[in-house]
Amino acid sequence: MFAVPPWLPLSQLAVVGVAVVCLYVAWRLDGRRTHRVAALRSRLLYGVPWGTLVSILFVLLVYLFVQGGFDYWYRPVVVPFRAWSYFYPTGMLAAAFSHSGAGHLVGNLLGTLTLAPLVEYAWGHYPRDEREATADWRSDPRIRAFLVFPAAVLVVGVLTALFSVGPIIGFSGVVFAFAGFALVYYPLTTVLALSASRVVNLLYDALFDPTTVASSREAFVSPWWAQIAIQGHAIGLLTGVLVALWLVERRGDDHPDALRLWSGVLLYSVSQSLWAVYWYRGGDSYVLFRAVGLALVFLLATLVTAAASAGDRSLLDRFGAEVRERAGDIRSDGSGRRVRDSRDDCGGDGDRGGLRAVTGKQAAVALLLVGAAAMAGSAVAVNMVTTADEELPGESVQVRGYEVTYAEDVTNGMVSVVDVDGFGESTSVTTSGVVVRNPDRTLWSREISKGRLAFDGRSAVRVGGVGWRETVVANRTGWSLVGSNASYRVTLAVDGNETPVYTSPPATAEPVVAGQNVSIAAENESFRLVVGRENDTVSAPVPRRNESVTLREIQFTNREGKLYATANGTKVRVAAKERYK
Image 1 (cartoon, one colour):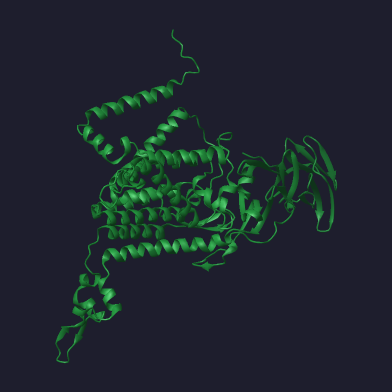
Image 2 (cartoon, rainbow, N blue to C red):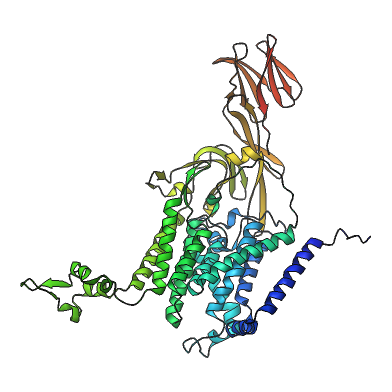
């Protein structure tokens, strides 16, 4: 029989073949395909969104050669490329185009591939009117495709980094800007593009991981919404919306249908979790304000719709005589009759005349600008100074300006810079885990949480900069005492050199053996078994596997990582060596 060579990617070829054939059939059945091609070629150079492809290539090159993804596809350098502070320009300039891993990168690039062409098509490589059609380089479709559009993408990326509450990383702020722009021009098409991006993402997964075998297992999982830069996404979306509204007014383009726009903004915002407003409470604790977030999303959809579709009639005219009376536009002539103020025709004083001239569209745009300014202002306050000045507690390892250590219940050096309390929450919070600090880069970060290290037992932190990287490996070893806490120690290893950086307080087992408390104390190099009460104790190193030690006539035996105490013919387990997943 015919045998398929093991090197032949049969599943991948089958997926590609079926997808291509089905797409071709659908294309041939489309009676408007000639019109669609003509429309593309009328707006895009050769009908291709070159600006989108150049932007994707740029982001990919940053990941491959700046972050080191070419050699470490799944383990790029992340820490130095976050937007830590205005005093650290490398992070501010690189954050929007860098990513935390391959999955993060691919997700944003697929989102760009499906949304950015809508923006590029709406803008167009060819000038649409005389104001755009000039004799200089700005009218050249090649310049507009290969330079102007990518340059605009770069500017938006830097802006999202500058005005997002750090330390953000990733192209998603720009992807949301693409979405905001596209929603103003093609509301429902944008929502459809979101579904298309998921099809493309599934195709990517099918090509690179055609068959997956999985089984149930324990996992350490943080809330999914705690990993989203909501404020950065909102800034990006508002940026795209405002730019699109400006372009619609400047070129006199058709306004979108109000109900379609409202529905599109609402559906996109909900599906992309813009409602997931949350706060960090310290440690591994977060709070999600779901109701508040959903209300804000409804308000956002309404304001965007009003900014795009509201008429040019004055707001006060819409509310009739009662509102005008409250505004001082109606006065009494002393006879009991009410007549219009003569200042109606002459404009009255400047303040009231200006108020009467405000349209619904202008008010909606103003509210959007105020919202964007409020979010940007909060980012400016944080990004001006992003790290606390206190030294890291205990021992640490030094890597070319980076200080790495493990600490528990220390004040979070990022969140606590701006001390604010409100609504039961505070910016003064504590955290525990592997902490990285670099005063020169004005960064302070808890890279590995206490819970994560306790679950995994071993985890790596990658520090570095442009052109270099170094890996610091955190290791936790410990004993879990029956009915009590764990006693453990943490070491950090760099280039094979291991440094003890943390030992936990002693832990005491719940069982009392022969009238004696049994505790285990962590030391830099080992663990010590402590037996006795208060100040009357004796100690010895915890016995090695399958060995024993006797203290106060109690025999302690290590049986395959489980510590048993035997006294007066009774044996009880008092501790077990920690096992990690």
